View (tube, rainbow, N blue to C red):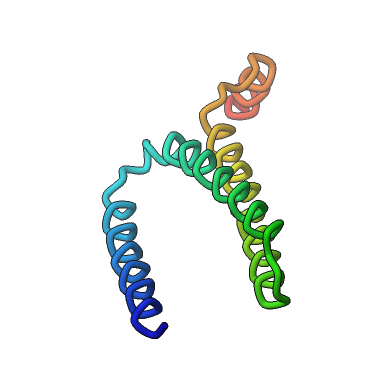
Length: 107
């Protein structure tokens, strides 16, 4: 049992280091496409967490499954909120708002 936990902990730590190293090298211009891909992956994780929760038999499994579903949901929703905010930065302003801004700058 402890050998399996040690293997899982090792894989988790290695994946955390690799993930940090990869994400730190991504330029900011690619953030939005990366978040969209991440949202798709976390959607799959959410479905997996719900399947695991459905087959839980003990109280500990139910609590951990419930936490997994909540955290995965927060991650998916948060990812879409961040992506939406990033996309708002790239939207062009309407001609009326540009005209009002230019008139305000001229005064």
